[in-house]
Length: 235
View 1: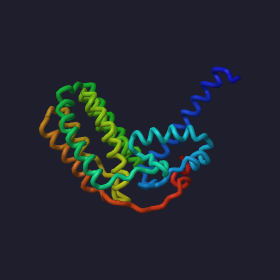
View 2: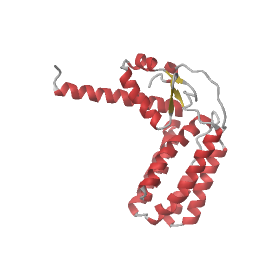
View 3: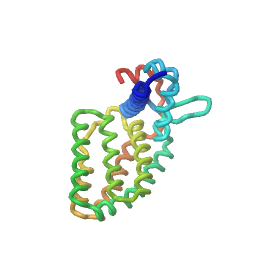
View 4: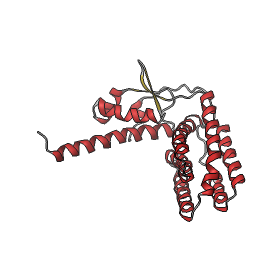
């Protein structure tokens, strides 16, 4: 019978592989290596990572919960492929919520919260300068999640967690191929307006910012076949 220590180590190992699969899929989607509708076979993951289906399913369930993939009857897991209508609805909902978040962030602003905002922007800028597109998209979403946290409303924060996840997927899937990782001056401008306590200007800017992101997307079906092993090579 395995010792308690052995059991703990096995548990930690399983969790580590589970997270490795989860992060590999996230990075492949955000880097355009896994297009929408791609089938993610459990058996392929088992072979690639030398793990059981139980471990693979844990990772897939987490990805499904975050709307990165869909678990479809009789087809299994596929990379989510939101329709143009769904994408527009998601962005509209996010604009409505962020218009409520920004005034709360300004009302609750402290020296500490401003430092957190500036630190998040530094990390985002570092990812952009290093050319890490997956990290850049993720950190851009985390900047908005930080604002939701600083607003101090847990209900809005929960809604934002889902909306940011879904928007990040939409951006990764439908931003034009080869789109440049430009300077994100609007995040910097937003931080300055928050620091200055300019509620209306900051609220107008967040709406403009989200409308611009949506406007540059090429919403529509993308047909591209891909091998899972190729997409996850090196992950």
